[in-house]
Image 1 (tube, helix red, strand yellow):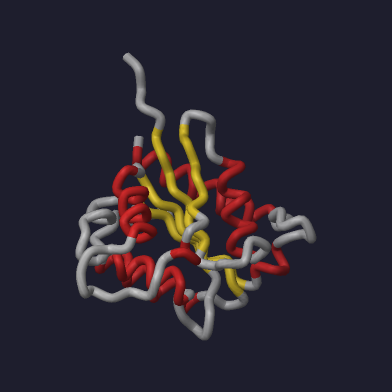
Image 2 (cartoon, helix red, strand yellow; image 1 turned 90 degrees about the vertical axis):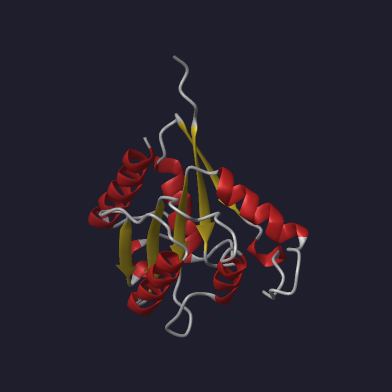
Amino acid sequence: MILKRKKIIGISGSLRSNSSASAVLEVVSNLVPGHVAFTVFTGLVEIPPFNDSGQAPLPVANFIKLITESDAVFFCIPEYAFGVPGALKNALDWTVSSTAFSGKPVALITAASSGDKAHAALLLTLSALDTKIADGTTLLISFVRSKLNEKGEVKDIPTFNAIKKVIGTLIQTIE
């Protein structure tokens, strides 16, 4: 029997490639076993401001298709002004009238100075989108910059182990 390779889409809530959230997402991508395809979505910047006036623009349609065709989604976000980064929230707003996230397993790591408010806010949004958030697939990494080295690698062993546990639990959820 041939097993289908599982697909996880990684989404950083930051548009900066050198952000802490993007660095943690890169760590996650390196921890995924070979039988899982992990692709980082980099198109948030291309998604236009949300409006519900008609057909979704092509970048939005492509985003929804990517989510729909994935087995799971792995978010890693910073916290901006005590909330979810605007570009990510905008992209998620476009998916509300679709079923792209319905029943979709997701993981969330919030990597910020504090992060608790953005973490709670995105969990609420993901709940509204009818995602599947299993126990053990969320992690709040406060004071993230103190846990990364200058190359963006996790130098704090308990944090590294917690990240490994989140990705492992998500993979168990989809298998």
